[in-house]
Image (cartoon, rainbow over all chains, first blue to last red):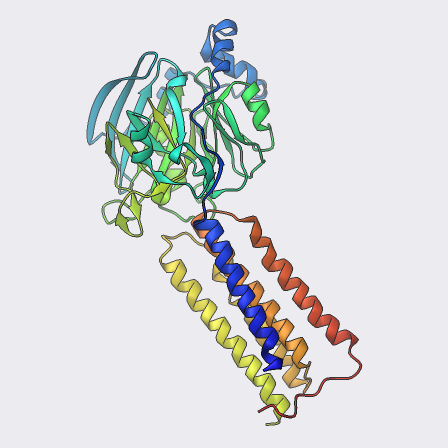
Length: 332
Length: 133
């Protein structure tokens, strides 16, 4: 028995540690900040006084290198002439929704491409201040989740999609509604949505979160990768998110021009819908005239909410069922 | 077959069994992971196979018994690395991270170092316990 003491004790310790790390990763809730409803709108005030033209301001500040390299962003008209015509839509509906300081125009359209049902929301905002984010239970932390539809309903959102599931990562920039929640450098591309209504994908090595806020970043996400830049596809045909293969449900956000956003959610993992690869998602968004696009959390998280209903078919554990996420992006 | 060979053969079979189990677990987990894969999950079986069964086979061929203390620590190291590999695979497939994961390779390394230190500094080759088998 004495000879077996070490294996028995160590085996027990290994099992207990593995049980603890499993709970720590998937179950134990850790709240880092409980009141996350406040917003930092200072960047909008400075915008009004210093930048009469939102279309050009962001590029002049952040894309000097691109301009120097001769890869200046295309205008909306230029891009549309260069991309394929959008696929024929299955259904379409348009809603004008109150977005606080003005009317947001939201046009919902369904497509069937790549053996997959794709849901597109074309959103034109009076100001990007109407594009907000929210955390599950209004709490920033780990393993704090709620369904996209629940978070959206709690914030009276007209429209919402899942965010980047920041809670599953321990690092990566998190800026929401102008406030920095996490400033640790990750490995994923960072999507920056600026107060002037433009968006840009930057490398995580380029800026700290505080620098981004000082540059006028209203929302920043760490998931990715970036799908389109200046209207060109920036992912390869076989590139994937982390260890994911081929086709999956996806959520992506894109932009046609300042304050004109395109949200795309695809079904997947069902007999009716195979799902999209990142390249297919990028190509589809390019066909819609999107110039900049970025992949948010996908898989079982992919959910689109509109007028009190989940419009897509989220899959969880092989069933059509919405699952909890850390955060959402919404219009309201 | 002498007692020494029987003890080593038991270790070889033990690690081969563990390799089969990890391979089976990885295959089943990957099957239900919606085409999300992780090399850490797929190749976790390599730890007991390469670092367990293989060295014990060499020991058996050379009729060298490393001693119970060495075997216990080495086996613990291999198990720790294999379990850590599977858990890293689980986190990869789920798409999350946990900094505590680094404890697995560190603990495995310390145990392996302890086993090698015992092996290096002992005065004479260990003999298998008389009471064994």
